[in-house]
Image (tube, rainbow, N blue to C red; front, side, top):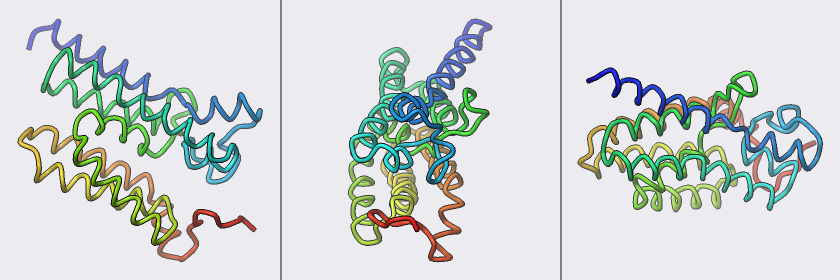
Length: 203
């Protein structure tokens, strides 16, 4: 690999990290309510916590914006580089940026919304099935976290067995493991029976 190729890789990954780091939920909540989203609800800088402050439309807006952080850069990279590993490296950098944003002392979201945008670009069929699984889990258990964890695990399995692009398998596994790890606090609360359910009022 030439020096120029290495430099391009570095610049693309760095740029993707910075794009992923844009803290949409923080900026929107700060703009509309004048408060720091990290001080309310779960403290998570993501769409679910934004919903606790802004309601349904706030959730939809933040979810869409965070998903576009993943979708648009990956689509551009695909158009430029095809099935190059740079596309996948950039995708991982987007999720890492979203989850560990340099703009908020490396405290960000849990990677779900940005991951949604990435897989809409890279594995739309598997994403659709994962979305159905998420919907079923949400309807049955009324826990967004449990739906996200389950969907991430199933998405990784479906991509692993359903694609011939080997590096996409590894990238999906990395992102799924990261998303599940970022939900470790939720997993502990689920085990203890303390996880907040949709529609449940906080005491």
